View 1: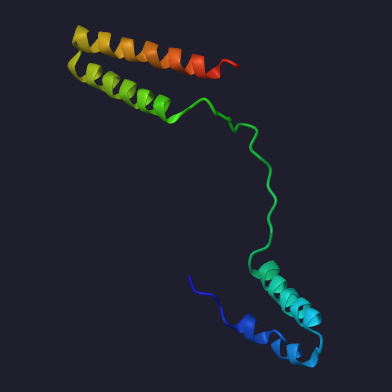
View 2: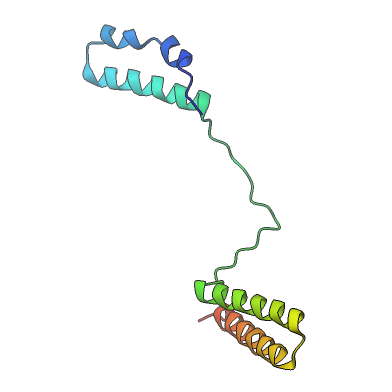
Length: 106
């Protein structure tokens, strides 16, 4: 995506030479730049979705456990062996216990 040059060229940049004090020059240029930002990248406010769930207890370790649990379930569904089911149950219980431990307040 390319920045359009036309709005940059249409601003009165030469007005900087008409101002004598450096503080006023800085203010003049910064006002022009802010005008560009307001035109091309306006500040947008938004509300957080009420269905948004904040989950600080989901750590990298728990994400790994969840991934392993899903793999074990997939493996069990494919093979239908009792050993795969036992492995899945064990991972499920460890993951649930880890999440509960992380959720507990200190």
